[in-house]
Image (spheres, rainbow, N blue to C red):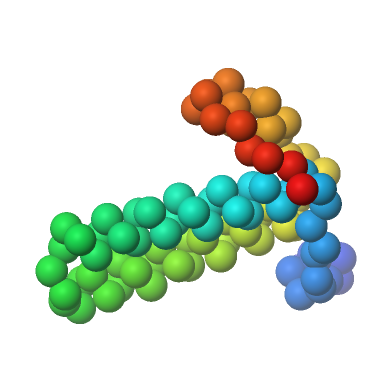
Length: 89
């Protein structure tokens, strides 16, 4: 593995102005899904695993944003697709 790749995995990536609204929106949507799972599925080992995997998915999505901010698609792509504005700042 290249040294630069290791550094990219383990250094802090400060969010730019465009990343913040993405994190906020994603966390809100992950929470909505977690609440839906909690309401619709019985307490069980499987549900516990589902929550763990959902949390993992959220963390990996945040890492994708943090590590690749220079290649983020414009917010307009999201807004056109979902008809929803992400507030900056």
